[in-house]
Length: 504
Image (cartoon, rainbow, N blue to C red):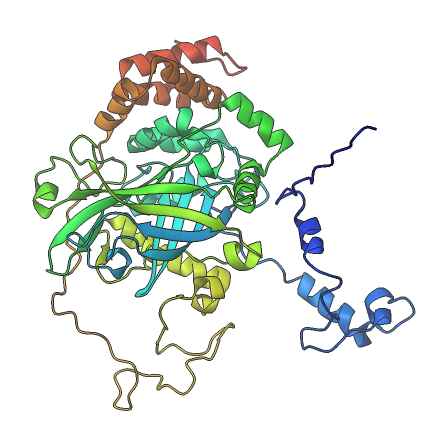
């Protein structure tokens, strides 16, 4: 007699989500209702022929809601994956910052995380060559604190007036409605401080192999204050405990055609299977004296803080262990903003941070309405908001009930707290950007010979599609970084002639 052994097949959290839901419910979970709670009969839900449509509440409600399902797409970071978990303090940080978030080793704070390509539209691919967003919302007992960072330790510009231009040159041509590399390379060659980040984008780090293998950086140098009123300045680093892993261009293009939601599925599937991704969180710490004597602008986003001069100090662990139950409600409506700060964390004094405080707030009002703070995923979990703001679009929650709606008042409305050791964000002067030195360091000392070869190949692959004048400008711009890089790009363009030949 032959024994037959059957093994239970493990459900895939992504492919079998609907099956998993069915397995955990005994049958239909209840009777369909209208949004007002009235039950819907079978005839209304299945037949409209030869019936008055306006009398069918199921039809009328379904149709009128359907045409309103979409809200404005994010201008950048439109496509994303996200999850929930916690941040745990692993090292004492009280000498640097008085925020209660960091006040005890072993303390856990709930978090929401959102990872996103910068330029890709909703429904686009996960394996594009570009920077990624790395956003974390900490639900602290003093309110929500957000780090809206990137997967690169530097950014493309120092002056926020360039933000609309930087985004538009990477989006669709207004006439052809297709992506146009002429626009991007026009920007890069006009603003050569962006070369630093684009050397990383066109290098091996340009396409992360899923979000679990992607690092995150605050990019800004934040000002913190301890309970003695002493200032410190830090950049946050999130390094994946699985290690940094990236995709080469050929494989990324293949995945894009076969599995455009590759990174989104990978994150959801891993968490669903109990393989919770984690990141080690560290900070580079500077004193006010360090800032004054650094020899360069430590608040310049196009630069990194050298690790040999400002080594990483361990702080904690970020763990994601819960998938969203409803993507739209919990990730699409997640409103991250640099302006979400807590006592002890003052933000950054640079102009890009200041501009982002305006832009992000305005974007949330535009996309989600005047009461976006009342959407559950944006509500503080460990503190109760008490504001004087009322009315506007839903959701209103209790609309602050019967509390006075003006300040100051003498009728026991909420009052501000008194900070005896209050510290203001420092004022800084920022000169024009000049970042060839760090771009040169990245190319010469931080890339291997093979990495430099692939970098040149990726640059040439992008540049070969642009006009000759932009090719010329790009070669000259790379000369300012390093003659070897410039010469190899020039040779690569000569070897990859298109119908618009590149000439010596």
